[in-house]
Each structure stands twice: as structure tokens, then as C-alpha cells.
Image (cartoon, rainbow, N blue to C red):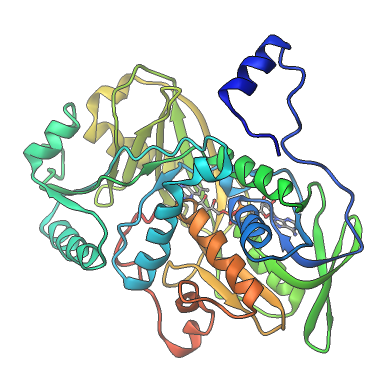
Length: 414
Ligand SMILES: Cc1cc2nc3c(=O)[nH]c(=O)nc-3n(C[C@H](O)[C@H](O)[C@H](O)COP(=O)(O)OP(=O)(O)OC[C@H]3O[C@@H](n4cnc5c(N)ncnc54)[C@H](O)[C@@H]3O)c2cc1C
């Protein structure tokens, strides 16, 4: 892999940009691999990257039914934070933030990680108690967070309407939180994985598993059978479909989750503002668009469109908090399908089928975990058992009752 550098930029500029290498190859599938990863989103590509670069696994393939990052990786609102309540969550999301902090250098690819600060607003006594409890728990886990008074909130976001219908009573700020460019994350990992020898096979759908004596030995795809020593499934909103193919059920429900961007405007908001109480969050992209999101639709669906009522229920709180945004036009709306567990925490786990691993259930908030999830999953697959960071997220917790109930901790869990 040639490094991207200032020199390369100048040289290719002089050559009319014709000499850039392809960022990754498009090989035909080999007959068999040591590890097959299903799903070419950020988590799948990160897993493949760490398997090849850190775990000494030589023959790895990523099989993607569409194009890289065309799933939730390219559909999310790019929020990154690690200010979760429970120890297991703090473990994996903080592991991810530490990797985010060096990711552009590690991949030699600008993922535009911007630690612009992430502010959770509190609008009621209950909200104040919630951020108090969570802020203290976060501190005990050694993660940064600060309480802000309404005046400090106003200083940070000068044009916010503190006296909205549910007045702003305070805030919880994680300065190391922020945003990253989502598709660059997929492309950076893809480029790094390819350079380490991973075969990335796009437009190839997995349609079944080859299982012998309760052990996975390969996958059926639209491009034929591919043998595999181990298989990692990282297919976000379609994980239950893949589990069904392997003959078991996962405790997941799939919902559409929507997002919106406005027309671009000059820089106006330089942090991420989230309100769980009135249910909206907003940040500004480098292009100037306001990136807006809220909760998932109320019904199960695989349609990537979303419902009309949620548009109204998101724009309402947005203009309540920021009346001057009422004059903006929305440019685009879309949805992705998120797979949600009962405790709103992910599943990184072995399964009832030997050598078949699942990484899913990230629901509305898995983008921020991409490097940490890929790293923990890769090391677990290579070792054949879940590592310390991944172990609490086993599917066994739904039998044992050892749930990681972040749902109650953050109504908007992005
Ligand atoms: C609107 C929206 C906003 C969000 N906002 C945030 C946010 O601000 N912060 C945050 O942390 N998270 C957010 N999320 C959640 C986040 O996007 C996801 O948790 C994360 O991107 C999941 O990544 P992934 O790599 O697991 O999945 P994906 O990127 O969805 O990748 C899975 C891939 O599997 C492929 N696949 C499926 N079935 C098959 C098959 N049979 N064969 C081969 N390939 C298959 C799909 O085509 C897809 O490319 C948001 C999600 C949405 C939809």
C-alpha cells in the first residue's frame, strides 16, 4: 500500500490525478479462507483489518452483498462518545475512543475524527438525577465528563433557547466525544485490510451456511460456495436473517432509524447537542449541513425509509431548542435498519454452532464502537473465545439474566 502523503498529493496533482492506485482490489473468491467475515460495514472491515494485521490470520475474506459502507455505516449521524453508565459499556466504548484517537495515523487515511465535544441536555429533575448518576459512574471508570450549568450551556451554544417548553436545567459534557466521517471509516479499514492481504468481495450475498457436525465449514453465496475455518457475521440490521440460516434465533428486533440533513449554512454549532428529554440531537457537518436525528420508528420493518410522524416529532423539538433553525430547508432524509436487543447493548458472541461468531445488536449506536468492536471481535475470533472486553456481551446473558441495561441509561442511545 502506498502511503498517502503531501508529496504523493503534489505528484498526482501534476499528473492530472491519473496515477492514484485503487484503494482496494476486487478479487474473485478463493475456494476457502481461514476466516470469512460476512458484512462489509465498518465493523466487518475493522474485524478483517485487525485479524490480518494483529492476529496473524493470513487468509481472510470480507463478503458484502452490496457495496462497502452501504449499510448503517454510511447511514448514521456519526456521533462518537464513550459516556455510558455501565462498566461493560464503558470498557468497549472507551476502548473504541482510544483507537479513534490514533485511527487516521494508523490507517494513513483521514477519518476526520473531530473531538468537538458532546453535550447531553437535562430538562427535568429526573434528567438532572440521570446525568448526575451517569456522570459519577463515568468518572469512576476514568472517563472524562463535566456537569454544566444552564449558563455554561448557553456560553457553549449561544443561540440555544434555554427557556423552551421543558427548560434546560443543565448538561453533561464529554469533551473527547464528537464525530467522524462514516464512509471514510469503511474505506480506510478496507484499504488497510486489502493491503494486509484480505480479499474484499462485494456484490456477493451469503445465502446459507455449510454446517457439518454442528461446526461451520463454509458459506453458500451468490458467487458459489466458499470454505471457511471460522465465520464472523457482522450484518447489523439483517443479523436475525443470518442466524435463521444457521438454524438458531437471536433476541433481536429490527427497526428503521431515520436521519436528516439540512441545506448547508456557515459554521453555527461547533459541538454535538443531544436531548434525551425532548428527543432530538444535532451537529454540523464539515460541509455545513445540520445533521439531525432522534429515536427509531415504533414498528419492526426492513424498509429503509421510515415513517412521516417521526419527521414531525424530530423537527418540533429541534426548532423548540433552536428557533432560528425553523427557517432552514431540509435537504435529505433516509433510514437504516437497526437491530436492537432488549437491554440495548450489543452481542459479540460465540453461537450454538462451533466456529460461528456473531457481532450485532448495536442498535442505534454502534458507529462509535467501530474500532473497538472490530478489535475485540478479531482477537476473540482468532483465539476461539471471547476476550475480556467482548465477554460480557455474550448471548448467554439473555439466559443468565446478566443484562447490560443501557436502555434505561440513555433514551437516545446514539
Ligand atoms: C439513521 C442512523 C443514525 C445512526 N446514528 C449513529 C450515531 O450517531 N452514532 C453511532 O454510534 N451509531 C449510529 N447509528 C448506528 C450505526 O450506524 C450502526 O450501529 C453501525 O454502523 C453498524 O455497523 P456495521 O458495520 O455493524 O453494520 P453495516 O454498516 O450495516 O454493515 C452490515 C453489512 O452487512 C451486509 N449484509 C447484510 N446481509 C448480508 C448477506 N446475507 N451477505 C453479505 N452481506 C450482507 C450489508 O449489506 C451491510 O453492508 C445510526 C444508525 C442509523 C441507521
